[in-house]
Image (cartoon, rainbow, N blue to C red; front, side, top):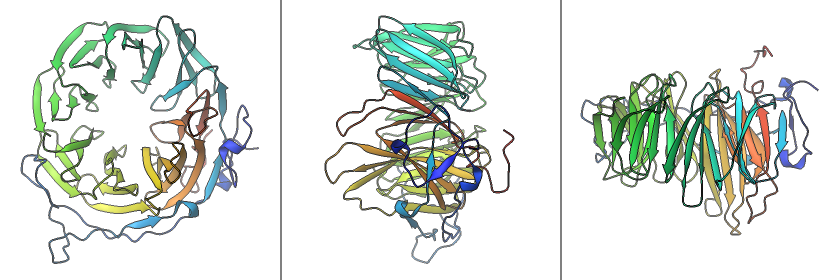
Length: 451
């Protein structure tokens, strides 16, 4: 059997577990359907960012009634999308409930579990354990990779959320051990020199010696992220977006009090910020780094309106638009809508949510993690599938993973870690971790893998 095998006609959970599985590229189905695409765009705006403004930006082509011409929406029947069967490269069983995180390039998988102590295990992409740590005295443990090189943030805490936040280097050295109380979120700068830690209502910027460089008071529930390639940070809460310097100074702020913010994401080169909103206008705003509005697009009501830039920053994907799991792809610089699609489902009995999405490294596909919940019988179980979409909006294939899973996608969508167990409609037990490699399946036709 060739490496990385994907087979048709079966579901993943119906097969017995094996240590490693492989993919034969000839069985990867590339059948899809052609979408009707009409191109439109939005004229740049010079006004300051104003989330209270409503309506479309002027389009290049207008049908005459004030509405811009937009691409026809394609409805996709998931049952008609070719089904592929993926088998894990490796699997690891644990005695207790587990959670997973995958490093952005996919070279490491972190597994956390709580037995007699909080346990952290780090594996490489081949399934070999790289290092592990046992941290006694705490009831709960959460881990998340902070950096593409494999720096890992670990939050251990007891029932009242009193605990520690630890940062481990790729070689397992503990760099920081910070006492915390309350929910904690953290991000690391691209050069791995600064940690931004949000604890309750305080943002702390620390260097890797543990010295606090700056602090800033934020509202409860605030989130933070570094602008790529820059020490500048974006801080977002329910009332405003702040742009902070590395020493904690406020460089700019945007008022959000009249809207419900869905997502705030900087472009890979740090020159643009995509902001999606709900509640009042359900709009997508593209901002310059100093707050000028570059373009705006009005979305369908409903949905979480998550956003994702392509690795080169030229494209912007908006997913979970409306109640049918809509996907919109834009030219990030001009605001031109390239295509839009949604799922052809009965929304009265099925709830669909794109849990995550990624552009492949080769730029040939979009990979989405789709959760489907049948609400007609009152069940709480959710089916997880990976959906492979070509760059022209065609649904090429789907991979059914199973029910009630935790799925962690690598940055390019080709490597993923999945935590599952023996779930029932009323149980979310997860105690097995599987690692999948879809790289050959996602290569453009005619290209061979070097592996």
